[in-house]
Length: 446
Image 1 (cartoon, helix red, strand yellow):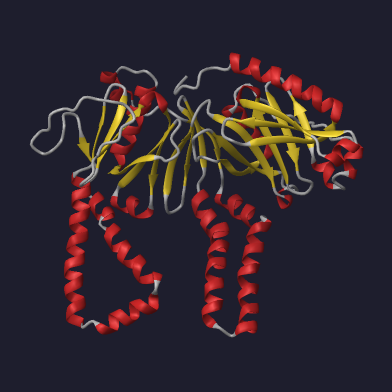
Image 2 (cartoon, one colour; image 1 turned 90 degrees about the horizontal axis):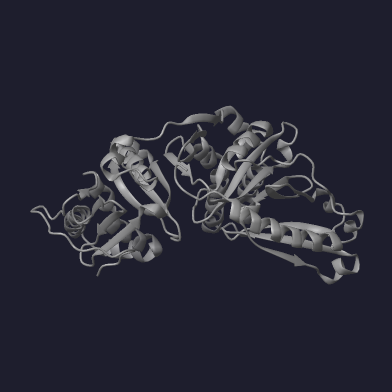
């Protein structure tokens, strides 16, 4: 069984089962894939631990040893065969990946549809000196990946794919190398740690992890009930603090011809690229406890990509300077207009946190009275514009305007004057059409 994104004529195999130009993954890959059968057995065991314990009690030690003697070699054989039958090659126009033991699958990834090629290194991969190559392709939700390659081979292949996607000749693409990068921002570990300590969600989850199990113990005196509740809460608290610190440690943003590059990670290292021209919306987030220091977090909505954070924490001026690099020609508006005072009848007090600014390049809307979120949508990325007006808002002459982007997100200017909202709707539709005609093409190294 073969699936492909583009047709191609088969080529003859050589003696090792490889077609001309094909390569295999790194030899440590079988060790990673050998865990799959063992994971199935482990999942079955933890699904019903009582039944597993009864089954183990019935088996003799010799039987268990024999079972392990069969299972471990079987897992090793599975890992080896899955590696042996996985090949990849780079042609003039596409990357081909052939996989499968019994049922064969061939993925043909068109290079001009590549929008991000990321290199990631989990902790064990770093120890082994290998890396994983992850591919973001326009119109495909699931990322294809090559795991694992040698660390230098992964970076060289990434550079070659980007060079070919940019239009370099196949015979010279592998010689181009990775485009040079200019550093824009680096987040100090101390600032990252303080920002997490000043995030309310971190303390809320930690407090819940301590208080809820204690209350359950007083109410039930059942250890299993307490553990079943405490472990997920502790995991959530750890993910919001320690896990996020490890993931965002040594966060560095650099600028290169193929987009903005992000390097990050304490244990697992990642080398990611924000696709040029594919950013649909930029959100500047400022939690309430960050306002005194004027720190912000910059998040992205990118069409067809999972890259969602551009800057985890930085002073506002520095973060806005990075925003101007990812959205060329865009200046973050300094002043936003509030809704009319009668909006307080629809949204008491919190109406003051809403704001709107429309410049020649972006539609900017803010919401939040304590923690604030400012969303910037380039006019060229607006897919549709809508006006909504509920019965209570209609009674007070108010309406809301919503703009939808290509990543499926929406930015709203709420509780505006109804006549002004209608005019804003018409003007924004015109600006979007004009912006799309004048927008540069979404290309690598444009």
